[in-house]
Length: 292
Image (cartoon, rainbow, N blue to C red; front, side, top):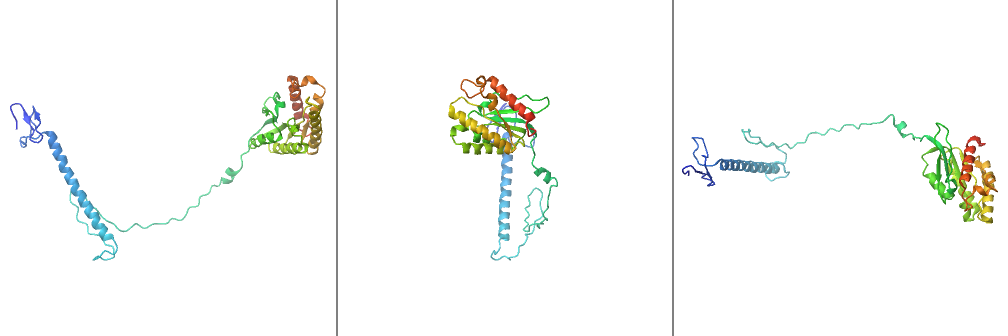
Protein backbone atom coordinates (compact mmCIF):
# COMPACT_ATOMS: atom_id res chain seq x y z
CA UNK A 1 0.00 0.00 0.00
CA UNK A 2 1.09 3.58 -0.57
CA UNK A 3 2.87 5.75 1.98
CA UNK A 4 3.36 9.50 2.00
CA UNK A 5 5.06 10.32 -1.26
CA UNK A 6 5.79 6.63 -2.06
CA UNK A 7 3.72 4.03 -3.86
CA UNK A 8 4.28 0.29 -3.56
CA UNK A 9 3.20 -2.40 -6.11
CA UNK A 10 0.98 -5.08 -4.60
CA UNK A 11 2.50 -7.72 -6.98
CA UNK A 12 6.25 -7.19 -6.95
CA UNK A 13 6.61 -4.82 -3.96
CA UNK A 14 8.58 -2.21 -5.89
CA UNK A 15 8.39 1.46 -4.75
CA UNK A 16 7.79 4.48 -6.93
CA UNK A 17 7.34 8.21 -6.42
CA UNK A 18 4.49 8.32 -8.95
CA UNK A 19 1.16 6.55 -8.63
CA UNK A 20 0.99 3.30 -10.64
CA UNK A 21 -2.34 4.05 -12.27
CA UNK A 22 -4.10 7.27 -13.18
CA UNK A 23 -7.35 5.44 -13.91
CA UNK A 24 -9.91 6.16 -11.20
CA UNK A 25 -11.71 2.89 -11.94
CA UNK A 26 -8.53 0.87 -11.42
CA UNK A 27 -7.13 1.21 -7.94
CA UNK A 28 -5.46 -2.18 -7.77
CA UNK A 29 -2.06 -0.76 -6.88
CA UNK A 30 -0.22 -2.86 -9.52
CA UNK A 31 2.66 -1.40 -11.50
CA UNK A 32 2.61 -1.27 -15.31
CA UNK A 33 5.28 -4.00 -15.65
CA UNK A 34 3.28 -6.45 -13.58
CA UNK A 35 0.16 -5.63 -15.58
CA UNK A 36 2.04 -6.40 -18.79
CA UNK A 37 3.30 -9.71 -17.38
CA UNK A 38 -0.21 -10.70 -16.31
CA UNK A 39 -1.57 -9.89 -19.75
CA UNK A 40 1.12 -12.04 -21.41
CA UNK A 41 0.42 -14.94 -19.06
CA UNK A 42 -3.27 -14.84 -19.98
CA UNK A 43 -2.45 -14.90 -23.69
CA UNK A 44 -0.08 -17.84 -23.24
CA UNK A 45 -2.81 -19.76 -21.40
CA UNK A 46 -5.23 -19.15 -24.26
CA UNK A 47 -2.64 -20.31 -26.82
CA UNK A 48 -2.04 -23.50 -24.86
CA UNK A 49 -5.76 -24.22 -24.84
CA UNK A 50 -5.94 -23.73 -28.61
CA UNK A 51 -2.92 -26.00 -29.19
CA UNK A 52 -4.50 -28.76 -27.10
CA UNK A 53 -7.69 -28.40 -29.10
CA UNK A 54 -5.79 -28.66 -32.40
CA UNK A 55 -3.91 -31.74 -31.23
CA UNK A 56 -7.19 -33.37 -30.14
CA UNK A 57 -8.81 -32.57 -33.51
CA UNK A 58 -5.83 -34.02 -35.40
CA UNK A 59 -5.95 -37.23 -33.40
CA UNK A 60 -9.67 -37.62 -34.02
CA UNK A 61 -9.16 -37.01 -37.72
CA UNK A 62 -6.41 -39.64 -37.87
CA UNK A 63 -8.72 -42.20 -36.23
CA UNK A 64 -11.48 -41.44 -38.73
CA UNK A 65 -9.15 -41.68 -41.71
CA UNK A 66 -7.45 -44.93 -40.59
CA UNK A 67 -8.82 -47.96 -42.58
CA UNK A 68 -10.28 -50.90 -40.66
CA UNK A 69 -11.03 -48.97 -37.49
CA UNK A 70 -13.35 -51.08 -35.22
CA UNK A 71 -16.86 -49.70 -35.02
CA UNK A 72 -16.32 -47.41 -38.02
CA UNK A 73 -17.35 -47.74 -41.62
CA UNK A 74 -14.53 -48.49 -44.04
CA UNK A 75 -15.60 -45.71 -46.39
CA UNK A 76 -13.96 -42.39 -45.68
CA UNK A 77 -16.17 -39.74 -44.18
CA UNK A 78 -15.73 -36.05 -43.64
CA UNK A 79 -16.49 -34.81 -40.13
CA UNK A 80 -19.05 -32.08 -39.84
CA UNK A 81 -17.58 -28.66 -39.45
CA UNK A 82 -18.78 -26.55 -36.58
CA UNK A 83 -19.63 -22.96 -37.41
CA UNK A 84 -16.61 -20.80 -36.78
CA UNK A 85 -16.74 -18.50 -33.84
CA UNK A 86 -15.12 -15.13 -33.72
CA UNK A 87 -11.56 -15.27 -32.40
CA UNK A 88 -11.19 -19.08 -32.73
CA UNK A 89 -9.29 -21.26 -35.23
CA UNK A 90 -11.12 -23.82 -37.35
CA UNK A 91 -9.34 -26.88 -38.81
CA UNK A 92 -10.81 -28.52 -41.90
CA UNK A 93 -9.86 -32.01 -43.12
CA UNK A 94 -9.96 -33.10 -46.70
CA UNK A 95 -9.10 -36.72 -47.55
CA UNK A 96 -9.34 -36.56 -51.30
CA UNK A 97 -6.31 -35.54 -53.39
CA UNK A 98 -6.75 -33.37 -56.47
CA UNK A 99 -6.66 -35.18 -59.81
CA UNK A 100 -3.26 -35.45 -61.49
CA UNK A 101 -3.13 -34.27 -65.07
CA UNK A 102 -0.45 -35.91 -67.21
CA UNK A 103 0.63 -33.47 -69.88
CA UNK A 104 1.99 -34.92 -73.12
CA UNK A 105 5.78 -34.65 -73.51
CA UNK A 106 7.03 -31.57 -75.29
CA UNK A 107 9.72 -32.18 -77.87
CA UNK A 108 12.26 -29.35 -78.09
CA UNK A 109 14.76 -29.06 -80.91
CA UNK A 110 17.30 -26.50 -82.01
CA UNK A 111 17.32 -25.85 -85.73
CA UNK A 112 20.77 -24.31 -85.40
CA UNK A 113 22.25 -27.48 -83.85
CA UNK A 114 24.10 -28.52 -87.03
CA UNK A 115 25.87 -25.18 -87.01
CA UNK A 116 26.91 -25.46 -83.37
CA UNK A 117 28.27 -28.98 -83.85
CA UNK A 118 30.49 -27.96 -86.75
CA UNK A 119 34.17 -27.87 -85.72
CA UNK A 120 35.61 -24.42 -85.29
CA UNK A 121 38.85 -24.07 -87.20
CA UNK A 122 41.67 -22.01 -85.82
CA UNK A 123 42.85 -19.16 -88.04
CA UNK A 124 45.94 -19.98 -90.08
CA UNK A 125 49.04 -18.65 -88.40
CA UNK A 126 52.45 -17.88 -89.85
CA UNK A 127 55.43 -20.16 -90.28
CA UNK A 128 56.43 -22.54 -87.49
CA UNK A 129 60.09 -23.50 -87.10
CA UNK A 130 60.70 -26.28 -84.57
CA UNK A 131 63.90 -28.17 -83.83
CA UNK A 132 66.73 -28.84 -81.43
CA UNK A 133 69.23 -26.30 -80.10
CA UNK A 134 70.58 -25.66 -83.61
CA UNK A 135 67.65 -23.28 -84.27
CA UNK A 136 68.12 -21.34 -81.02
CA UNK A 137 69.19 -18.10 -82.74
CA UNK A 138 67.16 -18.49 -85.94
CA UNK A 139 65.19 -15.35 -86.78
CA UNK A 140 62.90 -14.95 -89.76
CA UNK A 141 61.93 -11.59 -91.17
CA UNK A 142 58.17 -11.17 -91.52
CA UNK A 143 56.70 -9.17 -94.40
CA UNK A 144 54.52 -6.22 -93.47
CA UNK A 145 51.00 -7.42 -92.63
CA UNK A 146 51.96 -11.13 -92.63
CA UNK A 147 51.63 -13.33 -89.50
CA UNK A 148 54.81 -13.51 -87.43
CA UNK A 149 56.94 -16.63 -87.65
CA UNK A 150 57.30 -18.74 -84.52
CA UNK A 151 60.53 -20.53 -83.58
CA UNK A 152 60.40 -23.32 -80.98
CA UNK A 153 63.82 -24.44 -79.71
CA UNK A 154 63.99 -27.75 -77.82
CA UNK A 155 67.60 -28.29 -76.62
CA UNK A 156 68.66 -31.92 -76.80
CA UNK A 157 65.43 -32.93 -78.55
CA UNK A 158 65.20 -35.96 -80.76
CA UNK A 159 62.57 -36.76 -83.36
CA UNK A 160 60.09 -38.33 -80.85
CA UNK A 161 60.39 -35.24 -78.62
CA UNK A 162 59.51 -32.95 -81.53
CA UNK A 163 56.57 -35.20 -82.44
CA UNK A 164 55.26 -34.89 -78.89
CA UNK A 165 55.43 -31.09 -79.00
CA UNK A 166 53.66 -31.01 -82.35
CA UNK A 167 50.80 -33.04 -80.84
CA UNK A 168 50.33 -30.29 -78.28
CA UNK A 169 49.69 -27.89 -81.18
CA UNK A 170 47.15 -30.17 -82.84
CA UNK A 171 44.35 -27.59 -82.70
CA UNK A 172 46.34 -24.97 -84.59
CA UNK A 173 47.05 -24.40 -88.26
CA UNK A 174 50.21 -22.93 -89.77
CA UNK A 175 50.98 -21.81 -93.28
CA UNK A 176 54.27 -23.75 -93.21
CA UNK A 177 56.13 -25.97 -90.76
CA UNK A 178 59.93 -26.25 -90.85
CA UNK A 179 61.55 -29.14 -88.95
CA UNK A 180 65.22 -29.32 -87.99
CA UNK A 181 66.14 -32.67 -86.45
CA UNK A 182 68.81 -35.36 -86.59
CA UNK A 183 71.88 -34.17 -84.66
CA UNK A 184 70.80 -35.83 -81.41
CA UNK A 185 69.20 -38.89 -83.03
CA UNK A 186 72.47 -40.24 -84.44
CA UNK A 187 73.69 -40.89 -80.90
CA UNK A 188 71.38 -43.90 -80.83
CA UNK A 189 73.48 -45.49 -83.61
CA UNK A 190 70.29 -46.98 -85.05
CA UNK A 191 69.86 -45.61 -88.53
CA UNK A 192 66.58 -47.33 -89.33
CA UNK A 193 64.99 -46.23 -86.06
CA UNK A 194 66.11 -42.66 -86.71
CA UNK A 195 64.61 -42.72 -90.21
CA UNK A 196 61.29 -44.07 -88.88
CA UNK A 197 61.20 -41.36 -86.23
CA UNK A 198 61.81 -38.60 -88.79
CA UNK A 199 59.01 -39.96 -90.96
CA UNK A 200 56.70 -39.81 -87.95
CA UNK A 201 57.69 -36.20 -87.27
CA UNK A 202 56.85 -35.21 -90.84
CA UNK A 203 53.52 -37.04 -90.63
CA UNK A 204 52.66 -35.21 -87.41
CA UNK A 205 53.66 -31.85 -88.91
CA UNK A 206 51.38 -32.44 -91.88
CA UNK A 207 48.42 -32.36 -89.49
CA UNK A 208 49.29 -28.71 -88.77
CA UNK A 209 50.10 -27.58 -92.27
CA UNK A 210 49.92 -28.84 -95.82
CA UNK A 211 53.41 -27.48 -96.49
CA UNK A 212 56.21 -29.12 -94.51
CA UNK A 213 59.93 -28.52 -94.96
CA UNK A 214 62.80 -30.54 -93.48
CA UNK A 215 65.94 -28.60 -92.61
CA UNK A 216 68.88 -30.94 -93.12
CA UNK A 217 71.66 -31.42 -90.54
CA UNK A 218 74.82 -29.34 -90.50
CA UNK A 219 78.26 -31.00 -90.43
CA UNK A 220 79.56 -31.52 -86.89
CA UNK A 221 83.19 -31.60 -85.80
CA UNK A 222 82.74 -34.33 -83.21
CA UNK A 223 84.74 -37.16 -84.68
CA UNK A 224 84.61 -39.24 -87.81
CA UNK A 225 81.68 -41.46 -86.69
CA UNK A 226 79.33 -38.53 -85.98
CA UNK A 227 80.38 -36.86 -89.24
CA UNK A 228 79.76 -40.04 -91.24
CA UNK A 229 76.36 -40.72 -89.68
CA UNK A 230 75.17 -37.13 -90.22
CA UNK A 231 76.39 -37.19 -93.82
CA UNK A 232 74.52 -40.44 -94.47
CA UNK A 233 71.37 -39.06 -92.78
CA UNK A 234 71.56 -35.89 -94.88
CA UNK A 235 71.72 -37.89 -98.13
CA UNK A 236 68.76 -40.08 -97.08
CA UNK A 237 66.63 -37.08 -96.03
CA UNK A 238 67.32 -35.33 -99.34
CA UNK A 239 66.13 -38.32 -101.36
CA UNK A 240 63.19 -39.26 -99.11
CA UNK A 241 61.81 -35.72 -98.98
CA UNK A 242 61.99 -35.41 -102.77
CA UNK A 243 60.21 -38.74 -103.27
CA UNK A 244 57.46 -37.86 -100.78
CA UNK A 245 56.85 -34.26 -101.90
CA UNK A 246 58.32 -32.74 -98.74
CA UNK A 247 60.50 -29.64 -98.91
CA UNK A 248 64.17 -30.05 -98.03
CA UNK A 249 66.90 -27.54 -97.13
CA UNK A 250 70.42 -28.81 -97.80
CA UNK A 251 72.49 -27.08 -95.11
CA UNK A 252 75.43 -29.44 -95.55
CA UNK A 253 77.02 -27.72 -98.52
CA UNK A 254 76.61 -24.26 -96.97
CA UNK A 255 78.41 -25.19 -93.73
CA UNK A 256 80.92 -27.67 -95.09
CA UNK A 257 84.53 -26.45 -94.90
CA UNK A 258 83.60 -23.19 -93.16
CA UNK A 259 84.78 -23.49 -89.54
CA UNK A 260 83.79 -19.90 -88.75
CA UNK A 261 80.12 -20.88 -88.94
CA UNK A 262 80.39 -23.34 -86.01
CA UNK A 263 81.20 -22.60 -82.38
CA UNK A 264 84.01 -23.98 -80.29
CA UNK A 265 81.99 -27.08 -79.45
CA UNK A 266 81.87 -27.97 -83.15
CA UNK A 267 78.11 -28.51 -82.96
CA UNK A 268 76.17 -25.25 -82.62
CA UNK A 269 76.33 -22.46 -85.17
CA UNK A 270 77.86 -19.12 -84.34
CA UNK A 271 76.02 -15.85 -84.84
CA UNK A 272 77.11 -15.89 -88.48
CA UNK A 273 76.07 -19.52 -88.79
CA UNK A 274 72.64 -18.80 -87.26
CA UNK A 275 72.20 -15.87 -89.65
CA UNK A 276 73.12 -18.11 -92.61
CA UNK A 277 70.69 -20.80 -91.42
CA UNK A 278 67.94 -18.16 -91.04
CA UNK A 279 68.55 -16.91 -94.59
CA UNK A 280 68.51 -20.47 -95.91
CA UNK A 281 65.13 -21.18 -94.27
CA UNK A 282 63.68 -17.85 -95.42
CA UNK A 283 64.90 -18.49 -98.99
CA UNK A 284 63.32 -21.96 -99.01
CA UNK A 285 59.98 -20.47 -98.01
CA UNK A 286 60.02 -18.35 -101.16
CA UNK A 287 61.57 -20.50 -103.89
CA UNK A 288 60.89 -24.05 -102.69
CA UNK A 289 60.01 -26.33 -105.61
CA UNK A 290 56.70 -27.10 -103.87
CA UNK A 291 55.74 -23.40 -104.13
CA UNK A 292 56.07 -23.08 -100.37
